[in-house]
Length: 255
Length: 180
Image 1 (cartoon, rainbow over the protein chains, first blue to last red):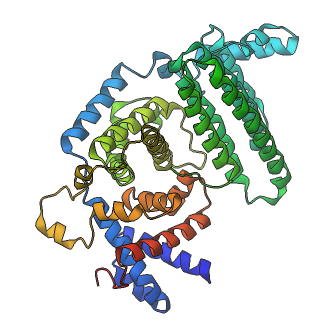
Image 2: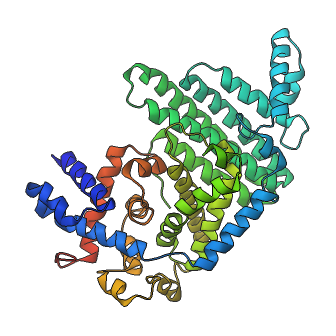
Image 3: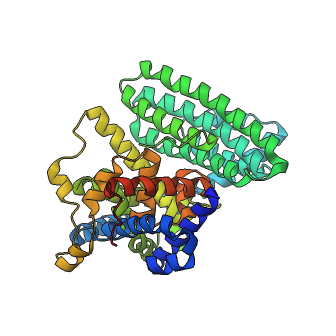
């Protein structure tokens, strides 16, 4: 019964959002009208109060101008423009990575060199491209998510390295990539939450993420003593914790 | 979306126009300061531009992706504020939340304004405040809000119900029916 009321309430809120009046909604649900009416009126007034506040036109125009300037040259890096199907990895790196993977099968040690490279190394784009290829070759969403867990470990190591060097510009980029891995894992967990057949694999995935998260958090925390700017690592730690908690479904961690 | 991901100004401009006001209102309700809301709104779109190449649908609507960026920035904003031990909101900042239009009729129509709504939201839990901001200031659907918050739609409906009940108690403590 309780859930049914929540569904009815939500349906009415959607109707309000699309232009129905409170009275029209109440007429559809006469039995629940007494309980619905005050909530719908508060919702309607909240909507009205919010939509009465608008950004200043000059600010909006200025923000758009800044954005267009960024699009035409400034902040987005040239290699991002070349990136396409493989996201933030340049095409040349994908090609190199594919070739390297072939060599890997043949037993060459070149990949090892790129695997241990750090964001300020020449081979780093190859490392990223190799990872994308590895993800692409993994079969099934859950396997991809497990690969993402491992890739998140690498990002944490890179963050610790960059914090030690005081390179906050690269660190911020790596942090975005780290969050990207966890977001991808979260999407897989959410998308498969109701599929009984994969529950065991999903439990294993969550256990792996939980275990790695604990270890990575300890690594980040430990590294705060080896940097001139421990604040940046605390910031990383907070964001990492938040992403992992969200992915593991252990409760929403608000502001 | 593909065109926007290729950074075609016209396509990104369309996304900008579609979402800008909603993002601004959401942030305004969360931070309650015009200057900070403007700064954060701008940051949301710069971050979106920076990362749009990595956006993939995979069940995450674009609006949810964008509001998630906004949510993260708001969370970071409050963490920074608490570290700085700055008073939550200066009274003059709250006054910036008055309806932007000068139309007295529009003002008269409101039973409470954004300022009162923001003050009432202070008495909600974090998650309740978030759902009210996403649904009524951001104009997101339950499905979109669920993606932003990393919760199931069912959980968000329960949360929305509880938030509205509490909000009503705060805004109408005597139990009188608003608007009616």
